Amino acid sequence: MARKFLVLYMAPRSAIEQMTNATAEEAKAGMDAWTDWGNEHANALVDMGAPLGKTKKVDGGGVGDTRNDITGYGIVEGESLDEVAGIFTRHPHLMMGGGAWIEIIETVDLPGM
Image 1 (cartoon, rainbow, N blue to C red):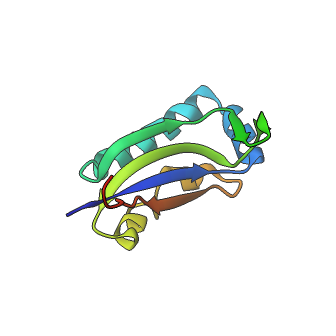
Image 2 (image 1 turned 60 degrees about the vertical axis):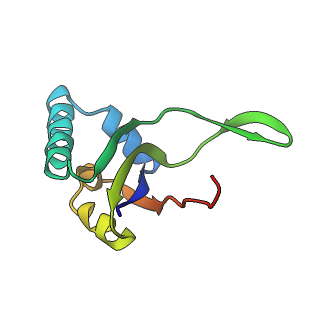
């Protein structure tokens, strides 16, 4: 049975700023590469995901602004963490430059939930 994995697309602020300054042609080329990757791995995709925006932190002290390096998410299925990681080795996000990376986290089914 396939297991589910949360994919987090990560990049430092400098890489995000570089991406937001891309020309229309560069942005289209980037989106085309994502679409091509998605089509190639459609059998594993549960949710292609989306870019993420601003972040709030909620803790015992209340609500406040915070920052992190998460730029987007996705959900995929696979037999193992290693198998799923393998399909991301040539992902277009990594071509973004500026030190972009991808984190993959296996979801866990808890008994009784």
